[in-house]
Length: 523
Length: 57
Image 1 (cartoon, rainbow over the protein chains, first blue to last red):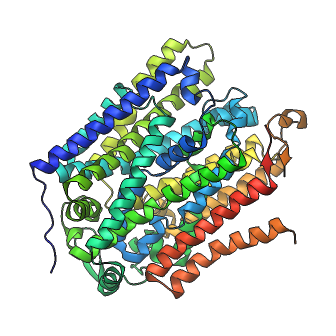
Image 2 (cartoon, chains in turn blue, cyan):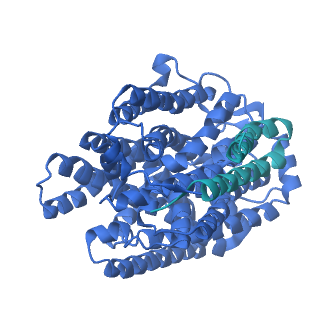
Image 3 (cartoon, each protein chain N blue to C red):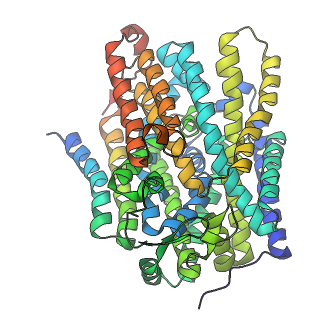
């Protein structure tokens, strides 16, 4: 018998508001305590370079697990069945491990005065132009990424408090502002570490609970095997969900990564590159202290445990599909299948787990938006304005940073308000491919490849941004680029080709300048 | 072929096998199998880093 779709009552609303408030208080206290310990703004940004493997590991987990992984993955599993796995990121652990292996060298740059990722590029290439361009690219891509975070939190708020979706969007924006004003972001690594632990525990618990609630793995596999794909809005098809590819009809269907094995290949490489390509991920190593080989393995263990959380959230989506069939694909516009996680958390886990899950989505999405808004605002002040006018007073720059918070909260809010994406993770993947394609090479590889040049970096950023506009869901159709897989491969491997070819064709920094950036290896 | 190259080949296999097991096995075996392949990839990547390319400050 199909269980009824749960309805939110005052008890759930109370539970959600209480847990979110508790999360806010803990974050603020951690932020306040750590800010008090920091003696300067610079020390606050990267700490005293004394952050150990546990905090760095969980902070990395938190910055990687955004609204996409902790929430949107259930929508993918629910809407697309097994073929949703490619965007769920079943192989994402491989990408986070690459980030661990590559990102540790960021420490080298902190010793040279670097405090942000674009500043690292300025030092690596001795170029303010690369710093400014990277800052601009980050702003564009992070705005797109923030849209998905807004939808995640607004969906949870809508269902658990019975507020309208648009009212919930406003509530989310207010929560972001409150979070920033009360200093929720100032704990940086420590707050992120706390979030990482919370997301991991709640994600695993919810996944296992949902698996049992839906009758176990065999029952779920049988249910998915019998169902057909239903588009957001409720249009039913005869395309079965039982396979790992979903042959959706062209041209719209080609924009889904799991439509064929070309899309699948592109999605795999996206997950391999994107953890390193995300600027907010690799920046986690800026505050890390020197660590031993044993501690390196401890960090990997944390990443493995935390990195499996997205798979458990995908399981929640499969469980919801088993319980309710395609019912959610036609309800709650514009939320549709993205509501699967919230309903499953209420049905499978009761008020306690549903409230903890809401706090986790809050942690993942609101804290991520707040973090991204801060990055975008400092990109304007530190990487663009201060870069152009080095004599600008710190006081004015600080004020400008505060003012810039408002447009960077408002732009993605307006975007989500006017055209919310039907399936948020699918939308966010567009930005993820671009960040993977551009910054994996420009930031990650440049730390290890001496021959990389500023012109190689500039050409890669420009090419990556142009290809981003040609996403099949944006302007790609105008030039016949309707297939997500071809687009993503063209962006990532085209960026790689341009990065290497232009670098080899232009002059690198002199050897004596590179010496300080490339340490000796010890086996 | 030295040891590092051998390990890199295994890492490449961990990527290549992902769509293969999705096509051949499907279902839960593929879902968690992908996770397992990714874990093997991750362990090998860190092993190569700590064993052969450890950095000094």
